Image: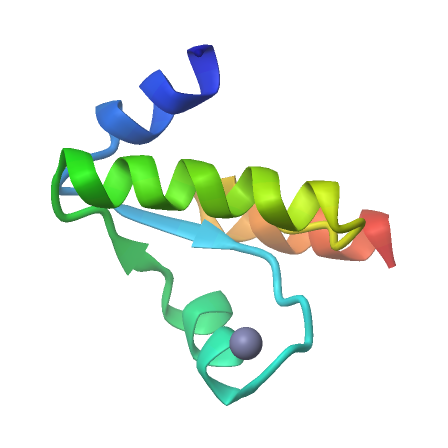
Length: 76
Ligand SMILES: [Zn+2]
């Protein structure tokens, strides 16, 4: 549950994720990041990250865009 707590701690802040090359919206999020609105949103993002990883799609959220880009290059 540490990972969920990470998302909860980010409420009100902007977080970033790598580009999974899925669609235009995903590219936008990779560029601009997104703000965690509330606890529900935090839970949703946490669930999504797990779902993607279980699907074998490497999708992960990070504190900075730089970290997200590093991860993106690493999983390529
Ligand atoms: Zn997409």
